[in-house]
Length: 567
Image (cartoon, rainbow, N blue to C red; front, side, top):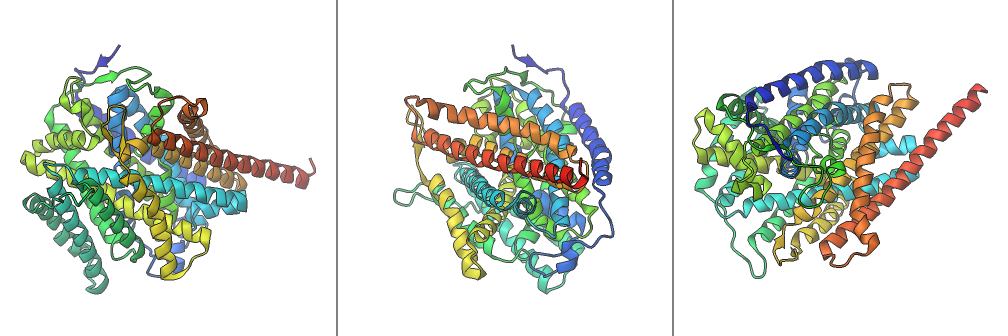
């Protein structure tokens, strides 16, 4: 039976969560710092190489904003909203908090620290060193496919926001102006030598201007032949990803990430303050059952639907792909890695709060996650005295900003991986690796899939569970690799091994359930569902091969230790 929390004050719950996360940062985060032996004065790869392109020592507060905006995409918004609607808010909240503290933040912190200790190399290269070349290539292939589904899901989510009939044009305009602001900031910092403080003083008010200006200059696309506005936006966004992947990080990724971080901080602060003074109570059921109306069991689908916000394998790619190359001191990993994940869990809580203040009979229950998020969070923000329309535009631009900051990072990392696999060098090698990485997402967001009643199914809905599962399995495989490294270096390997076992169990279970209809050859499978099943089978095979290689390495290591000691 569904139980409601109608007497539960949302502000008190939010305050309790803030205390728990702060305690985790100062308690468990510092425990990790001591257990791993982080050194404040050790020379990091960013300081040693400092090439002005990829390796740049960056102040931790600046880097936190960039890192936070890269990892906090639509995942910690869409996942908690979907899972909250399906299972009730209580199990989702418990997973967000416990998952972030003991799994997600451990994953991010350890990934970042391991990459710094491995001269800024990626997780895939760490796999190569500790699990062997075969595991390395298997991991690269798995990693590349995981990024493909990140790009696919988030591109389609963004185009859905831009093509929304009422507010989409304004959000699209604000998003374009926001990107121009990011490039302008990068140029000012690079060539005019403007101080970061002065630039922040000027550009932050410009973000507010962009939010206000966008709805007054709506950018609305008309159908072009057989292509609908949503499909056109998908092509435009993938074109943006192509460009963003090739330009130096100082001109777009860093400044846009910094502005995005401030924007995300502003969104968090506005939402939390609105929540604190609004006086809302929880009206949505706390628990709806162990199986949702779609026939999906809470175990394991809760833990793959809510990926970002609790634990995310994509974060490990960001940590070891771009962030580790900018860490100025090893001890900065605590704030950037562990702290960044806890901040994302707050984003997830705010997203879940937009479900908690709904009633089961509300028409928004059947709406898209971005609409629920926009309506719910804007209602909290209006407690600050902002007009509802401006608040809604603010929230929708924040939603698009989350995705932008992840899209170009994911594309750049996919390009790195494909170049590593092919050996392509130089600009043209980067160009070809980028467009090939965008080819599958382009196909996925272009197809017109329908359900049994003939209604169009958005691409992100088709691939969301697969994205979540591959993302969480990537986290489990990353934690497995890190556990082997920690074991070989005599550090507390159980810290990463325990969450690895839980994540591995949930994700393999989820893949098995997705593959089951394919194996049983059930009738009536649509093309999209069949495609998901085939992909899930491929991911399962890759993961089993990787796990086998890891076990073989561990057993070989133990055998060697026994041989060396003569025991």
